[in-house]
Amino acid sequence: MRNQYVAYVGSYSYNGQAKGITIYDVDMEKGYFKYRCEVEVDNSSYLTVSNDGRTLYSIADEGIVSFRILENGALARLNSAKIKGMRGCHIATDAGDEYIFVSGYHDGKETVLRLRPDGSVGEITDGVYHKGLGSVAERTFRPHVSCGRRTPDGKFVMVADLGIDQVKIYRFDGKKGLLSLVDAIRCELESGPRQFLFSRDGRFLYLMYEIKNVIDVYTYETGDRVPKIEKIQTIASTAPERLSQLTAACAIRMSGDGAYLYCSNAGDNSVSIYRRDADTGLLTLLCCLPISGDYPKDIAVFPDAQHLASINHGSNSISFFRVDYEEGLIVMCNRSIEVNEPNCCVIVKVPEEK
Image 1 (cartoon, rainbow, N blue to C red):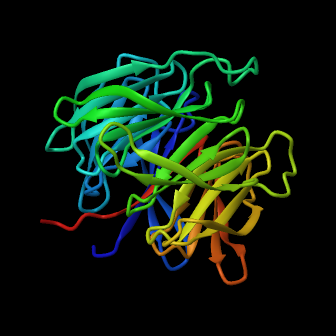
Image 2 (image 1 turned 30 degrees about the vertical axis):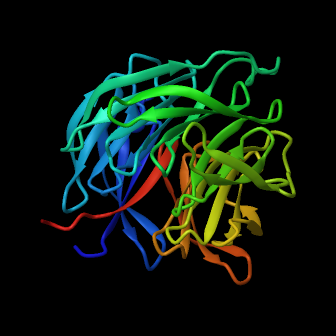
């Protein structure tokens, strides 16, 4: 079982065409997914894996569902937990797998829940509703929380809200699991900050804007009351050609070694790949190319970073590509596979038996 990988894809299940989570075996050499089975979850809109690689979490209609990842990659349901709010759109665990953070697009709420030692989801420790108004535009006139993560130093939680064009910064009580607002990154009006991630060393922050179609790069330093966050680069467009006026940046991912960053673009139906300088944190565009599908809602980067899968929500498909970093190309390497309204994908190394 060594170096065996599985992929978990979350899908909407309301129309009866999918059960929720589809499990695939991953062919690392060919860059392909092979169907194995499905697991029932009501409308799995986002997935994440614990940092120890042993637990899978899915957003569901009832809140969050947790699964133990077995030695063969199969899933054993642990429990489900309510979030006392509308269904979330993004979840993330912290470095020690102590808490899970649920972002709510529909109700503008960030919810914090404690995780138990066995990986199951425990009680809610805090929940905050964002307030305020954005512009008069349809998607940015009220809070839409789209991403939340604990900072690498563990002192703060940052929460992106694409409805009010802010990334709010909360001091985080690691014992009680409580949030206290201390600062905010105030973004350009109607920019729509959607997702962000940190470099592995915690020195750099990458913030993607859905509506403005840009990526901002920041340096990050911890602090006692507030962190020190300074912008050092703006990527002018995640889709330089911008074939559609409806282009919207959807997801960002980073390769396991931190050398590359990837961004998918709906409307334009493309993926952009950037080389990342580990010392300066700066990004350099390598390519922006079509993904042979519609509405690439997520990107799955293979662990060796030699292949990627585009999770195409609009065309009910997953397309596969080999990445040529020297030439700045992605080359389709297998036929697309069908899956109903896929939302998110994570590739996980199968845990070794203890």
